[in-house]
Length: 149
Image (cartoon, rainbow, N blue to C red; front, side):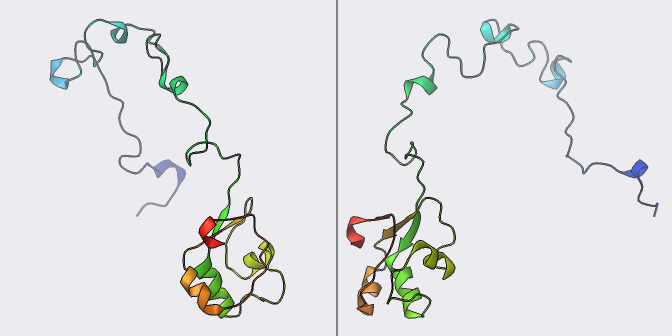
């Protein structure tokens, strides 16, 4: 086997696909009009920019860019989600001290949540398990769902 040097390096097969050569006859499937079809704006040189819809208001301007739906802006806040069942699990296993106020830092240090960006939202999943604990809690969180209260 030849030594591994700069003069015998090569790409993996398929890493650099060969350029599509259009206009080389009917046998290639990309001859004559070369994939541009017949006549019209699309067949001419100097095509319009991507997203241009021939003078009609483009779709990016027809739809609003604001609102409270999940895929719209949400004032830039990203809350970590914390379920009551998960909280009950960590209290039950002694990871959290219920005698004092449980802060966001305490929750992160105990491994209840992995990352806090803008705060924590308490959700009601596993509420039945939480009720079995029968313990009073003081939580310092950003938000809570209506059913988690």
